[in-house]
Length: 169
Image (cartoon, rainbow, N blue to C red; front, side, top):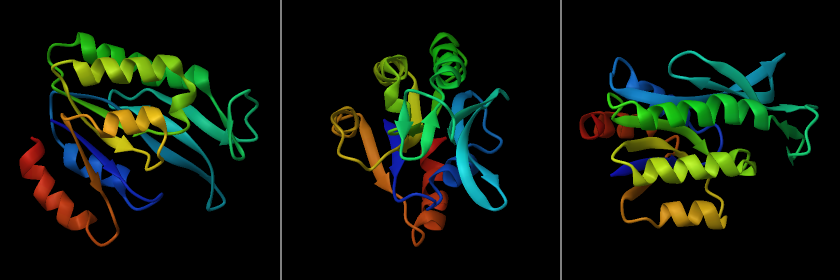
């Protein structure tokens, strides 16, 4: 069973995943973090569990792919994000693949969408986040019988940590 968290921005989805995987083995994948400047969010970075880092999106980043005021860095998404997901598929020691996030920015990449589908069809389990939007690609994933989507809120995130820690690993 694949487990995907959804919820409003900044509710703690990524933090929940990071706490759940703390000290765990046989995992791979990536998570995203905000890039801040003077306390304000100006972008997002992508960080693999084996330490590779890149810029996923940034304000004023020149790109033909834009979401609001953010320019999407397809090169880093594909080289780092897609690259690590492909490695996870090939590595027999990896059982759980972290994908944070399956969201609007990432959907600009056909390679990203393709590798996400491959991971879903593999013997690996996904622990990740998925955007709440009703976009056909996201809806297709959420409706799969092997996917459980859980809404994270400020009120339930701590409780979820306790419940999920025993279930996931």
